[in-house]
Structure formats: C-alpha cells, structure tokens
Image (cartoon, rainbow, N blue to C red; front, side, top):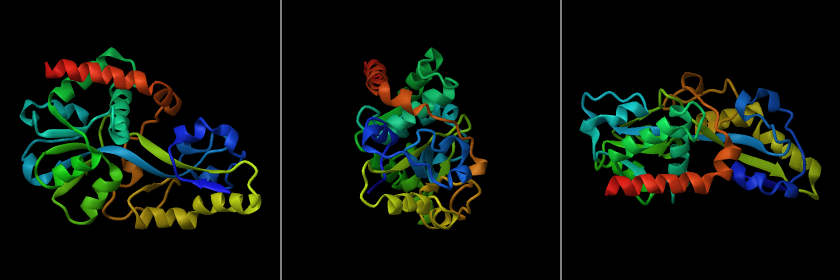
Length: 257
C-alpha cells in the first residue's frame, strides 16, 4: 500500500507506480520540501556537514568549505569517493551548489572542488569518514548529519559544522502505491508520518530531521532555523549524476599526478 523511505530519484523514475496524494499536513512542511510532485511525500531530512575532531583542530576555525583550503589541513581532511558513495556525491553537489550559487557547472565552483580535494584524503567508505574523525585519524570529515550527530549525542570528542556557504538537506520520500488495496489507510499513514505528533517524535528522538517547520530539536542538534539551508535541484543532480561524477574523476586523477 505504501512505499516508506527512499531517495527522491527512485520515486521520480517510477511515477507510474504511485497514486497522486498530498498530505493534509503539507502546508506545515518547510517550504522547499513540500509535495510539489503530487505523489512524493517527504517525512525526514538528512544533510551534508563537516565533522571536526575537537582535540586535533586546535585554534583553526572551521565555519565552512572555504576554511578547508587552509594549507595546515592538507592530508588531515577525509572524504568518501563521490563516484562510489551516495553521501559523498551529495556532499559534492552541495559544494557545487553552494560555491556556484546554484550553478552546478560553474567553473569557479569546480576549481574550488579541485583545490579542496588537493587537501583531502579520499577513501572508499562513508562510514570510515566519521569513524576516522571520531578515532583521531583525521581532523575534519566531509560527512552527513545522521551518524555525525549520533557521535555528538554519545559524547564523542567531535563537533559538527554546518557550512556558512549553505547546507543541502535531502528528504526521504514516501508514497501511496498505485492501485493500493487499502487506499484510505495508505493515505492516513502518509498523514500520520507528517503529523505534528510524529514529526515531534522525529525531532526529539532520532538524528534525522523532521520536515515540519517549527518542530522541537534536542539539545545535541542545532535547530534548523539556525542553519543556512539551500535548495538542491534534485532533478538536475539525478539526471546529470554520471557527468558530474566523471568530471570529479578527471579532477581527482589530475590531482594525483
């Protein structure tokens, strides 16, 4: 009856498998995450951020991407590979979006990517990024919110930084299956997961963000109103994924030479 969870791209390429439905709670959702497709309902968010080891960073100030160009951080920054990791690809498109002012093909933004990754160690696993920062192998990691905030919550010697240049939050989607035998209950479920009651549970009990505006935030999370959120062009990023990854690969090979 319901698909609960998954990337927007998965829904968008399978629109014919879903019933049109917009939650009764849609007006309470943060503007840029409302149901504009008519069939995908977002219910939680996860975003890119910088994870910093507090003991290793010393007096170096990290407020955003541009601070990572500091020569003192060369070899001390870690990222997963954007050609293999979905969270690292999200970090790459966040960077291009923020530096290029929404233009993913901006030459200055790609030059910035080259400069930053000249300072950065690229590894295979996204989980090894936050583990490496937690364990003191690296000073800064290009990571994402869910595991990073869990580390903060659990008392690890780390802090999270939401980039001054802008942070992209990607929504997890849900949708009613075409021809659902329990159509009314399926629609009620969509309303349930976007209701104030459940959104407040998300906001205070887990480390994924709720999509509803003005939801309570636990003390180990920065309130979303204090973060510079920028909108992702999800259709562009999905359709041009291979081209963006190929360009990154060219840049990274060039850096290694």
